[in-house]
Each structure stands twice: as structure tokens, then as C-alpha cells.
Length: 327
Ligand SMILES: NC(=O)c1ccc[n+]([C@@H]2O[C@H](COP(=O)([O-])OP(=O)(O)OC[C@H]3O[C@@H](n4cnc5c(N)ncnc54)[C@H](O)[C@@H]3O)[C@@H](O)[C@H]2O)c1
Image (cartoon, rainbow, N blue to C red; front, side):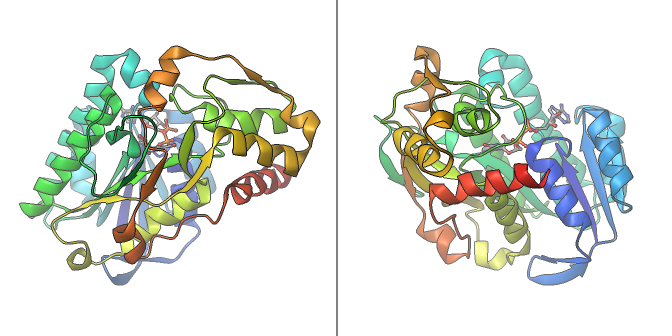
């Protein structure tokens, strides 16, 4: 089979492409299939070229998803699996409304339209986010809670979910929208996501740098490790469409932890000196966004479909420490 990964140069995208390239086969819609080629699409060329250089079956498709040539190439390639990760993250989509609408919404419409030109409907994974939810005060909700985003990013993701649901009903794609928890610990540099601190307060102190904490210690977060994000993505591709049914949106399980408990875990695992590198600097704009995110999400449907969360936050910290030690 052929696989398309959009946003392949991004954090999750590179993990997914490398993991796919290391395998001979993958369970797709209930059937084990041999992986023949992986099309890696992104606007950022250099990381795409690096992916293609280190993986023989990876082919780079550089360019914006709004580019008709890119969309034509995708339609002609007719992948059996589309993993749609290209997006602009929450802080950026909030700061630049037009960019968020163009990438997070219009590109999803364009990509589904490219799939409509294919002879067979591909399995289509859409990366959504728990930012589609809002709640009064960082409450506990369930996967059945009505989404009510309070950010442009969450609104664009929710619209994408509806498009995926409808295109699946129409038979254009075999859609699955994955509402990812906030991923922590995210390697690399801080990004423009409002939740960037959820990785920064662990990653930066461990790298000997200071980290800014823009929120209070009592804020609860629904988190998953990078390894879980990868495992969730591959697992979602393998599910049979009949097992998913018409409700193509899946809210993924996470571990619930307060910011204070995250800092205490860092102290326990890495020591007081490391944790002392976190500087509190409350930021009302970030507080306003993240405190409307649920602190805990109960996800019986996703669990029954086999999505297994991390066990606790200490695992997320030690996994990150092992990863940096191996680099
Ligand atoms: N990391 C998280 O905590 C998290 C949580 C929930 C959901 N998600 C979602 O998962 C997906 C991947 O997240 P990530 O953390 O890897 O993000 P990322 O920012 O690292 O990667 C996104 C990629 O999309 C590319 N891109 C942006 N505009 C594009 C365009 N017009 N055409 C083609 N490519 C374009 C970027 O160059 C980037 O490489 C995103 O859809 C994101 O919204 C991530």
C-alpha cells in the first residue's frame, strides 16, 4: 500500500514517517498490508529531504497543501492511507485568523476533495485536538461532552471533524478524527501552541535552561507522551471502519496531572536544582485559553477500541530522559 503523511516535517509527522519506514507492513482497516511507499508532504523542505534521505521508501512532496500541483500529485498517487497532520498550532491560529482558516480548515477541505478523485476511498486520519472542548473551570468531562471550542484553532479542528464525518458518510474516505491530548514531553524548541509550557517546564530544565511557567500550579492537563501519539496514530489506521461506525471522531485517553504534580515529578526524578530552573510568570492570555480546556477526559469508547494511555506522568518524564540520553 501507499501512505501519505501531511505535515510530515513536523513533530508528530517525522515520528510517524520514521516509524512507518521502519516497518514492512501495517494493519489498515482490519487487514495487514505491505508498505510499498510513503509520500511525505510539508511546506518545510529541508526536513522532508532529510526524511527521504534516511528512508528509501519515503518520497518528499514539498509545497503548501493549497498548491494545486501538490494536490494533483496526491490524487494521482492515490494513497490507501492518508495521515493528515499539517496544521498551524493553537497560539498561531489565534494570532493569525486567516492563516489558521487557510491551513487548518481550507487545506482539509482541499485534501478531502483530492481523495474524491481517487478510485478507492482511502483510510483518512485527521489530527484533531481536545481543544475542541471547553469547560467552566478546567473541569472533568467525558468523550460525549458537546464540543464548544473557545479558540480559532479548536473551532477549525471541530469543523475538520465534521467534514471527515460527512465525507465518510458519502463514501469519499474511511475517516477517523483523533482528538489528541496535549503531547508532553515534546522535544525540540518551544512552539506557538498555548500549551507549549506543558513540555517546556520539563524539557528546558532537563537541558540546563530556564523555563517560563505562565499558568498556576493547580491547572490540570490531559496529556499523552509522543510515543502514545505515535501508537494512537498507527492503532487508528488499523481499526475496521465497521467498528468505528458513523461517529468517526475519537477522543483519545490521556493521563491527568496538575502542573504542580508535574513539577514535583521532575523534582523527584531529576532533583531540586533542575526543578528550580522553572520561573513562574503568569500570562493572562495563556491562562484564558488553557483554563477553558478540560482537566480530565473520561474516554470509555476509545478505551474499548483499544487505545491505551500512558500509565502516569513519571513515565512521560523518564521516556523523555531516555530519548535525550540516546541522542
Ligand atoms: N503536539 C500536540 O500536542 C498536539 C495536540 C493535539 C493535536 N495536534 C495536532 O497534530 C498535528 C501534528 O502536530 P505537531 O505537533 O506535529 O505540529 P507541528 O507544528 O510540529 O507540525 C505541523 C506541520 O504542518 C506543516 N504545515 C503548516 N502549514 C502547512 C501547509 N499550508 N501545507 C503543508 N504543510 C503545512 C508545518 O510545516 C509543520 O511541519 C497537528 O494537526 C496538530 O494540530 C498536536
